[in-house]
Image (tube, rainbow, N blue to C red; front, side, top):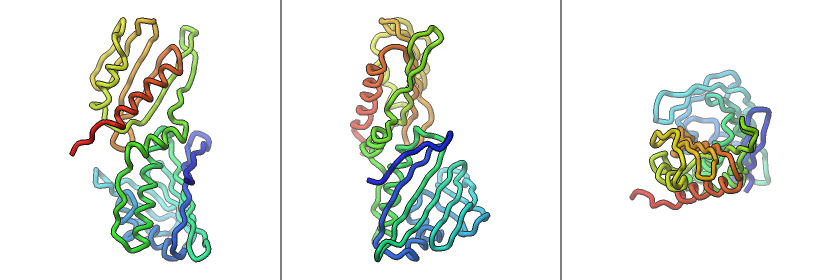
Length: 258
C-alpha cells in the first residue's frame, strides 16, 4: 500500500501512488477528459486542462461546487481545486505502463480515512476504465475505512490541561454509521452517570462519572455517510481510547440493512 498522510502547515496531504498497464497518453485522457472522468471520479466534472480555467463538480446531492485548474502540463500534470481542497495528478512513464502520483490536500485531518478509502475505490474504477471493462468498484467498507483510521494514527487522543489544572483528553473520529446508530452505543458506554449536565439525542451527552470525570460526547456532521465524534474527558487516556475503539468496532460490525 502506498497511501501516506503528511502535514503541511495547517493542511493535511494524502498521497497515493498507482501503476497502470497503459501508456501515459491513455491515462492522461482518463484523468483530463470529462467523458472519461465521469466513469471513475466521485463527481461529474466539467473542466478543460488549461491553467486558470474553471472547473465544476456535481455529486448529485445538491448544487455544483466550483474549482479552478491551477496547474496543467498536457500529458503529465493536472492540478485543480475542489472547493477548498486541492487535487494533483502527476504521470510518469514506467516501462510499458504509467505511474500516477496523486495528492489530495485538505483541512479536515480527521476526514483522511474517508478520503483515502474513497480514493482507493476510485482508482480501482480508473484501472477498470483503462482496461475497458465494466466498472465494479464499490463504496468503501467500514473495515477499510477504520483500517486507515488506525494506519494514520487518527485513533489517538490529544492530551491537554483542563481549567482545573487536571489532565484532559480529546478524541475526534469519523464514524462509519450515522448518529442515530451511534447514540445507543454511547449511552451504554456512559454507564450510569452521577450527574447528567446535557442530553440532546442524538447529538450531545455530557455528564460526570461516578469517579468524578467530566465527559462530553458530541456527534456532528462528518465525511462520507457517518457522524463525526468529538469526545472530551478528564481521566485516563487509555480508558477513553478503549471506549472510542469499542464504539467504532460495534458500528463497524453492526448488521447492514438489506
